[in-house]
Length: 144
Image (cartoon, rainbow, N blue to C red):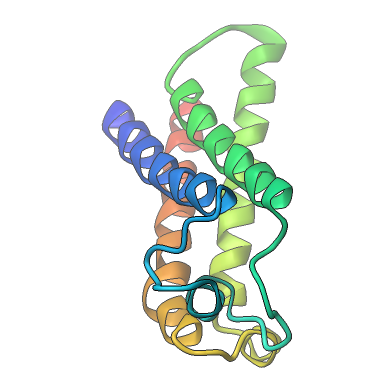
């Protein structure tokens, strides 16, 4: 089961990272223009444009790094390396759990009210973060 969970996490996180790379080079899918993309994937009430390309690439690399960690959690290296990989898994689990929680808190709703982001966040983005957190929790628990 561990390998299946890691594979699923890696695929999902790689797809999310790929979307960020695509936006980083100026792509606008799933919208038709940048303004609608901001409404769909940013949702911030003050945002007028997508974040700078360099920032979007950094986010993509961070997400892809999480995919790599999910794969590393299926392996044993021994000693300090195992401890670092396990700690990274715990941090990622808590990070995605926090992002899930934020999606349903008042301060988040006030800061990110634009549609369709607010609806997609409640129905897709936040629940996906919970699923990712659970996946990391399962992988970490197999190591303990």
